[in-house]
Length: 61
Image (cartoon, rainbow, N blue to C red; front, side, top):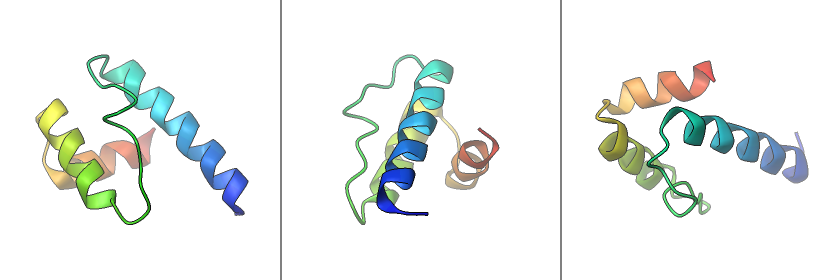
């Protein structure tokens, strides 16, 4: 998967996450290289799920 395909997949996933949890903003979902732990933490705070639940949930989208 090249960088453009990865960015497209991320944008699609981001849209699905925002549909499921409307209180999340683009700022909450901004993915900076190497900041996946920070992203998981934000999602945990906003959704009340554990890290493992967040990862499983993202995989299921």
